[in-house]
Image (tube, rainbow over all chains, first blue to last red; front, side, top):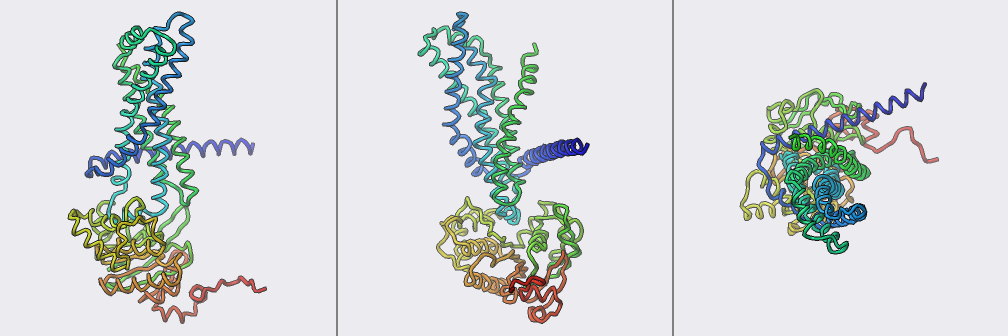
Length: 265
Length: 248
């Protein structure tokens, strides 16, 4: 009986902690949006963050996009050639990259690279009293620290996703046509014929929403870091894990929702 | 100038401040002493508006600050300087940018004026020529002095020091104490110094307040505190741990 009570207590504890965290993330998000309209934008901070997030993430995002496209094209070719459907490889790669692989993989990479950096930097500032120092100097931390990071990620995520899509589809073409000998004209023709602009729109909408999720979770974790250096490590790990899980879970609901909205007719 | 009336605050389910009452007059230097974890830094954070009390009032220059929102606090924060325990310099900015930060926030854009004001503040704390250094390149004492220069660059009416000499060697600690006295004289600012360094407390304080169990337990001049026969105050002042005998 005691075990059951303990188990219920533990489950209840996890549930209330999750609710409190989710509430904290939503409050931070609301404060960030309110602050965006209330204070002047710090362009220098925004550009610095966009350089770190947008420019410095390009290599890892492009490499991931390229090899995802390559592997997916190869796998599809191995399966489709059994049925003589090689000409369908192009649209299959392109639609899969647009709807799922591009935005999800790009966002997971951003959660790992950018989310971790945001959480670590903010939590270090928090435990060394730099956030308090900002307030003591009359600066609202959300305005100075959160808004530029949030905007930079929300702007950069769809751009990086777009780049990953183009690279993935391009490399998929190279693998299918140059390595496996698929007819290039058919490949492109079918790719353009069956890839709808709505597929690209889905990728970009997902990327923006994932950007919001990653920024909100990483900033919330960073600004609520427990004291001590161990807290920074714990916060960083939790930020990456929570942001990655949130991206994967939200992706399912977005897939259902966007298909229902965009393909309702 | 500043009055704390019955400040109460609980953190993590524990009542840290249980009704703190303290008055600081213009140009007065008050030292708050007390054992580690007794709530000294928490008290300072209430004065700066970094924490909101559960009950009680912070009155600064006749204004009740506790009722103000985050943004309404800012004009008062500009009149109060604070030296944080770990200096809290922004580690992504150079010393110059750290010192220029509060001035830029006030709207000062003229680079020449900023250079002059930063150089002047650094000269006061004997750190001339370190403008281009990053905080990571400074020693502990230099960081505290740079942070002090940042705190005084707007010439506040009240300056608060959170453990200014903790972790510093005696020579550097002495230089910080002298600097606190020098700044008080130079700008005529009131000071609150939180410390458990009795040498520092005797040197810089016009008045010493002993914080114990979330309340001001005893107040007096440094001489009165030294002569106080209350066992709690006496043990703290003399650095004596009652009931622990390791002589063997």
